[in-house]
Amino acid sequence: MKKLLFLFFISAITIGCTNVKHAEFEKNTEKAKTFFKIHETEQAEEMFTYLHEDMEWHMPAYGMGRGGIDEVKVAILGYQAEFDNMKFTADNWLPGVDTDTGIPDGSTRVYGTWTSVNAKTGIETSLTSYHSFEFKDGKIINGGDWFDLGGMMNTSGHKNLVVAEFKILPGKEDIVFAAMDNPEIGLNITRNYKGCNSLVSTFNKESNTLFVISEWDSYEEYDTYLKWRLKSFPI
Image (tube, rainbow, N blue to C red):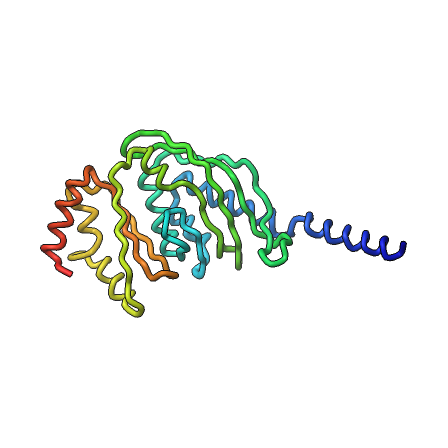
């Protein structure tokens, strides 16, 4: 009988501990809510102050894996350039847990819906999403976005997406990034080429792969650009 009472006592403590919210949960949830609010008002620079320099973030596009602070900044700027009237409606904010113990660790996560209007086509979007946030030193250090980015882009009028994938040799990253930023040969030339409506890039550190995502008036215009690019700047 004593053993049964002891086991019951231990079980009650364990269940109680796993159901108690971590002391940092409420504070971190408010930070995450504010992060989304300033995204709605397109204050990118203010959003950047919430990001930890060592952050790792699950990117929603197929094949991109986890990105760092630079990739997240590019994504934020891309969303704010492409969409107006962004609004997030949360279904539930829930405590996150330590993946090893299953015990709340102060992180926060949310299910909800983003609505917006495509800035170029005027098409309204409604996107079901899931997001998680882990914090360190008061800033977002880990987490990610999970939603159908490709479906949203297609239904909002982006019918001519081009995803270019570049595998970079180890140790050559700085050379490639410098070339991408070079005003004479870099990505600004692509952005300004006739028929290109938008362009963003992101780098997957795990696979050492650079992704360049662009949207064009037509694939014919992209082919024209590509032929010009290869002729003018042969690899």
